[in-house]
View 1 (cartoon, rainbow, N blue to C red):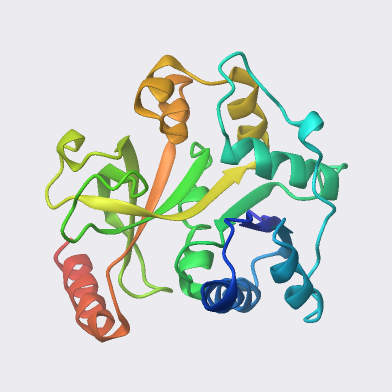
View 2 (spheres, rainbow, N blue to C red):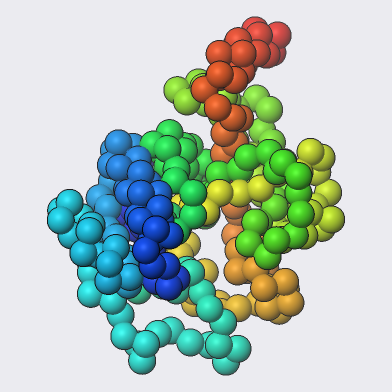
Length: 255
């Protein structure tokens, strides 16, 4: 199935200045270049940090004027929502629904490589999947208030040989506390989400769920409203890829 993704790199102003801002700019710039290299779709930068916007503007990045606070989508519980923010940008950029997939990258986090961005398309190849995330092994798991852990049912007979070292599965649960995860070893997700466009609209139409509010974790809403979340795993650095590829081939020959 052909897809036409729109990549939104969200870069909120966190108050960084001086050397800290320069380091953040380099990280965001690497992510932006990776999104371009992934060649999966158009790219929009959602940035309200004036210094970053000025530097990106010189590179030809596409920006939209920020949506005013009074235009925010708000529910009774006044939750801060990353999905709402990206939906406002997408609906402003693409009013006629030319893009059927939205990839939201949180640009203030660590830089992502091009394969990580493009690998999100593999879970979405399943027509039943609404949202896709990328998972990695969670080293030294601890509840730091930002790292999101995930329980995954892996589809062992479905491997991605185009991106060596990848496999896909279905998410069962998200948790900020590693003690809330059942699977071992624990996995964490990277700060990037891919939504089918209709699924993003449905996600926001329902508003915050009780479970989401109790855990302060927006992705939990997907399970409450019956959505399916696909997961793609990146096994590690390039040095691990050759061994992973050989094991994949042996597994398929045995099957």
